[in-house]
Length: 202
Image (tube, rainbow, N blue to C red; front, side):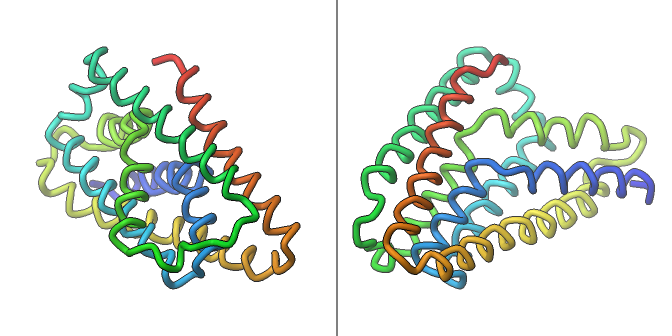
């Protein structure tokens, strides 16, 4: 991959991972509840999904899913149900004493991975990265040594930043009323993302 190609890919990926979405909302909400350091397990879950999708895109599986109406719809509606369920649950729990400090790292990791993985629209971003930026005259294996570290580093920086933002909001929202409304807003975001995913055309 040329320097120019890498720069264009890196710019695309920055926009891809910094645009607020369900992953960002989950990082912020988890950091509000349990603090910055513990919330970083969410970033690990997202990175696992990123590695999986990058690998699937490299071998063409993601393209197969996007071209299979049944698989795509199963993934899409699973994502819709999961996001709306998270939003409703978090809305109802807003203002209640949080028990997330007792939640295991495994539970937080799996939740972050599922939120990242159930949105089939994110597959389009990975497909775009390969269809637009991979050079056909250079072996894919060689280019993966550039694409994967770049994507993972930028993804880590982005969602670590969202965790830091959540931890900052958690420190600021010391009173019960502020904390209640922040939790309600984030819960509404999950529901909104689920509805938008359901309404989105292929």
